Amino acid sequence: MAIRISIDQLLAERRMSVGDFAEAIGITPANVAVLKNGRAKAVRFSTLDAICRVLQCQPGDVLHFDT
Image (cartoon, rainbow, N blue to C red; front, side, top):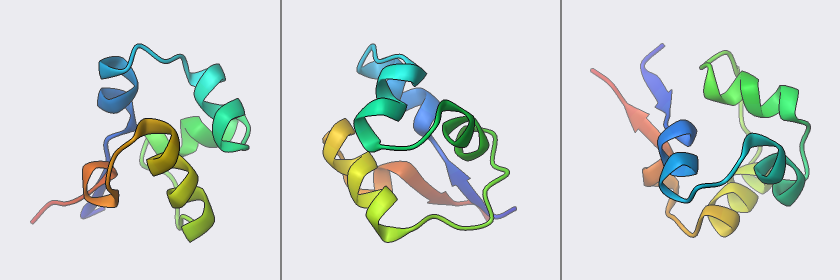
């Protein structure tokens, strides 16, 4: 897949656990794992908004296009 999600790096930089992150954005830890492992087929804008709000970042910090 050409789109890469860099949640692992952002969580490590912020010293935040997957469980705390999942609770803060309102999805299950299993769904966070799907995002982290690149198995997600889609991401809702509301979820992306919550990710950026909790991690205090921009969408471009989370989503990367690999050529």
